[in-house]
Image (cartoon, rainbow, N blue to C red):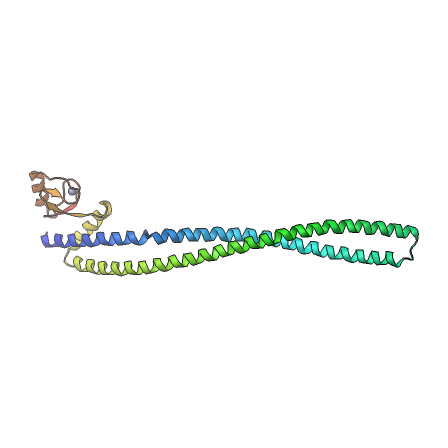
Length: 235
Ligand SMILES: [Zn+2]
């Protein structure tokens, strides 16, 4: 094996490690967490709005219905009272009508109280829905801000990645394919470091010392490899 190929492979690994770091940074931008956080809050608010808007709708329908009932009741009262004032009924009829009017007045009072109570609940319910909608709108804006940041960061990282990939492809040209294959396989099982510089009797991959006998054994092979970690060694 030509030593220059191994030296080229060392360059490839250096680039691969830089690529790994860029990819890790791409996936761990703080804005990504912030975006996820905002997205979850938006979904929670959407659910809250649905519940609150549903409750408001029910309240509004109840209010309209009670108001309608009140109108009918008031019309009936007016009619009865008009007849009472007009007179011309028998004493029994008059007494019956008087009691009826009294009862209607009672019903009217109770219904008015209910309508008023509902009216008092309506405004806070509308404000609650509006408040939630404002919070959701702010969250959507916040999300959009994070999205813009993420996109511009990714653009920079991707441009840097493309440069590194290009340089890696150039560095790989002189390296024999079987060596590249061994390198890729080792990289997968050795936390990204497949090849190490051998300096002062120490493996640059696992940092363990090789005895003179082990060094002889390692460097007699076509592709020198550390006896401890099996990484490729470059003298
Ligand atoms: Zn080693």
